[in-house]
Image 1 (cartoon, rainbow, N blue to C red):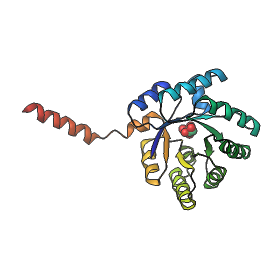
Image 2: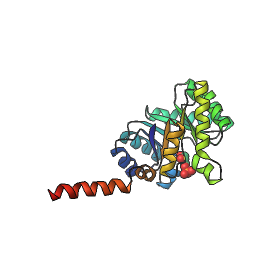
Image 3: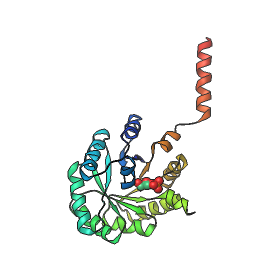
Image 4: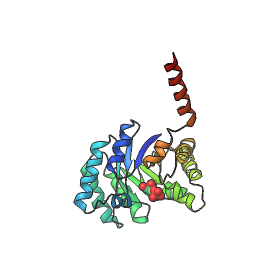
Length: 216
Ligand code: G3P
């Protein structure tokens, strides 16, 4: 399972990359705005900066919601760097844009996916990644991990090449649940990744090893 970090914060991207387990980055318009990155030129520069830090796919989302606009923006984003993946919303025009960008050899990540039906459409259109949002489903008392397992089963049965990228991850157990469900990728903020490191018995065990060593 690949680990992507879901942020536009360069310090956090560097910190995750330094751990040596980072395979890519995802961003969205809200995450870019949170870092105060505004205006097309600054946004493009920021994506390039991210590509310089991480040796993996970097998802950059289009703002347009019409077919021509998404193709235009997608082409511009993809031309920035070979590792840019164009993030397209799961809407009717988006589906057509995914098909066309795929035909032009541009990688896509179909975002805002909340059902198996939407995931099947994204795979049929040739999306490189499909992003089901598990935390936002959990927020409305629907099991997000169950959706990941369902999509993974369907994609395996039909041998779809589209990778299941579990998004909207809120805590470390979401990551473990996604691993059990067979997700290809998890994208999450830094905290849930760091949470995987923690166990009180590891800390206590290390403390005892060092104390015993120092008593010799
Ligand atoms: O990048 C999309 C997704 O990961 C957003 O997560 O926490 O805003 O639901 P969240």
